[in-house]
Length: 302
Image (cartoon, rainbow, N blue to C red):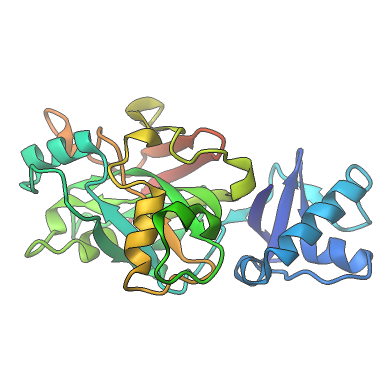
């Protein structure tokens, strides 16, 4: 199931993509004398029961939606699936071997494969949705870079999770761009360089975990103005989803709706000779197999 947060009368609503339409799940449930949440976080918290009910209603009423429940996907404003993740977004640095190599050459990071996941946090205020603008503030950075990443959405409270059980805690997957200002890394710290407003595009939807047989067998790519810059596969992660959830939950309680950005493969802008960086007027697109396409323009900050 593809779940979206969309704008209806300038208010965020929870919907499911059904062909070329968005079905409002709270309205669909109400038409059947039942209840479902109208926002994504509440829906995740109410699952798996909410997910099972939504799936049942969508199958039962497919092609025969109650009046007012469905709207055309085309032309509807999609928002970030989770607009304000409670903890922000857990970022993972240096999680593909070739990216470790290119980073050590161009950003003076460690050249050895990390022994543990490298974790940082992007604040919730960095999150924007599909087709929202990435702001380029030329007064702050001249090295605005891209990073295509698979986003993992936690589905239930997770503490001291074993690697072999980790996928049981996943609600779904999304596309995520870990936008980074390379010249704003101060004292080895990354959060300011990666956590500014608009630096975490996410979407266009969440694909529920049952539709992704193996999150570590997905092609992942990124283009700028239609030109391919990154092209890899999630099987090349150093620490896979199992390891990341186990590591994070060993000391941090993960909760429904928490988001993990699992790291980027090689091909970031600073790795090119000469380096390439985003500028106003550029369009960035991330494509992840079986998940979706996330598109965002770059604009000059006002």
